[in-house]
Length: 117
Image (cartoon, rainbow, N blue to C red; front, side):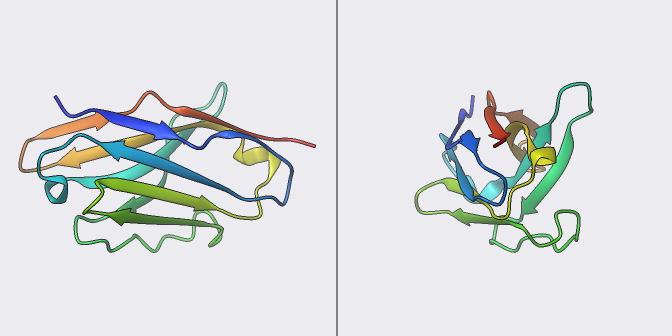
């Protein structure tokens, strides 16, 4: 079973930046599309950013360009760079790995991000 472990969450002031990291134990990391989701209290989980196996990120405007996803296939890592954070970005952020090859969608345990002064 592939394990996903997030890190990098914490408390940050509005306008600040934070980088989340997710490590994977996958044997063939390139067979997984990686994504970051988030879930705020009382709200459904929502997609933040997704990146293909080759490293191409989606280009949705959902986060107004403030969030950037990247992956390092050699290190089996995926990152989420978050800039100009706002209080409404406060949530638990989850790493997701999805593979059509293995027909699986896996989740990490989540990392808390709190944006507050």
